[in-house]
Length: 124
Image (tube, rainbow, N blue to C red):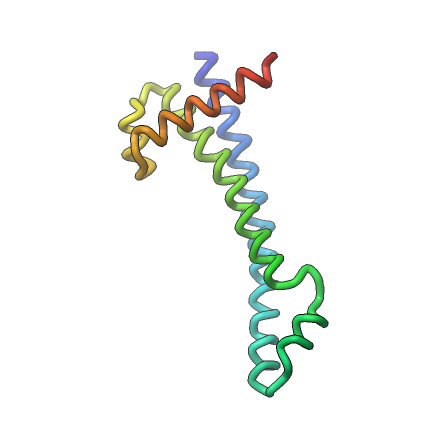
């Protein structure tokens, strides 16, 4: 039962991280929408792209996009691992978890082993 409790607690933490990442990404996405519209209008009026990019507020659009992708990837990786561990602790087989996640059995097995090794290393 302790393993299940620890797995659920880890999953709860991952869910909190997903919520925060999604909120941060939402704010950046709104900023991207505004800037994309503005850039489109400026380009359609014949403005020079080099000048527009050089004078763009920072972080620039390309940076906002990269940050959104990295933020979700980081939070998503922990969520996938935490959810897989919790499902395994509840008795699901690796095959069943793989089917739920839409990946191979080998991918889930590797994910569980990787996270178990990381957890063991942090307990030393």
